[in-house]
Image (cartoon, rainbow, N blue to C red; front, side):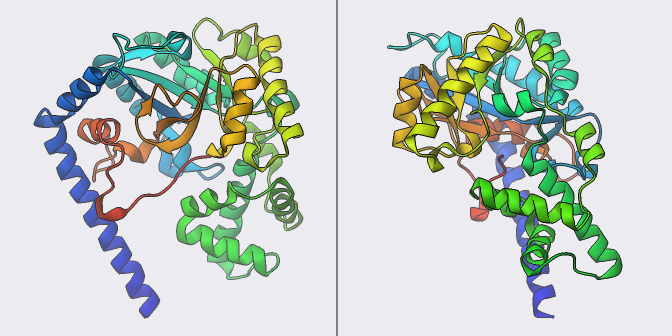
Length: 366
């Protein structure tokens, strides 16, 4: 009874927070405050908005079961979002930032569209929209994973936990050992929070979890490979005219967990491989899982990068070239109570990224 009551209270609180956010978003946008904020940033001359996308879905994001749904934007919503960005911002790439020692005419009004991980759906669904609207963008690539045609671990783990969770709900049997059953319980309770934690696990621990999921038969590798495919180097070479490339590490392992020798190798190898395979110059890096340290930022500069982006939410400052903040975007970023795209919510996510009603902030990044 107590647990059920707590869940009801949590749902009521979440809905109240959502309603409050929608009302404030409408006030923020339709009162003109959104444009006033942009004017103030433009006047300061040293800020930049960077948005993060991961994946695009053709259909309903809520129906996704084989990978993390909170990394997706539907194609229909994506087109509306890009049209909004094109209308209100000066769209840039990182090459446009080179030599930014002083105020630039676009500073405060400039925006960079980024994609992390290099999924095939970016080419199939995002690029046609970007080309149609004339929107430049940057894709951060985990070079080693692309070369080895690996399925991202987070997709495999989500897929496995979802299947086990569905089986538990149907027959009540717990799969695997106690630690796996605990993960299934937490997955049902809050999958987003669980994956935010899994991002901090070391490689050996993640591999052990993948092995356990395979042993209990939770992994359908053929299905995983078909819906979570990363782009090939051949496909990427065909995108060089419309897309700027950056590094997302070599193995997509948190860089701050590496010793200096491996860190240097990851930074150099990824940049070199992307440049050799695509013919494009690589000047930027997105820290895998958003994890970095002072050592990482210093060595990124030594490895030849000019800019580095984090997963810290907020507006980027040009002087923080190796710790640029970004605004993560997915379907839920600007969804109203009817489940439709809200221009006002999207405007507030961009103009007031630090606002979270009732303190309800959740990290949703991979």
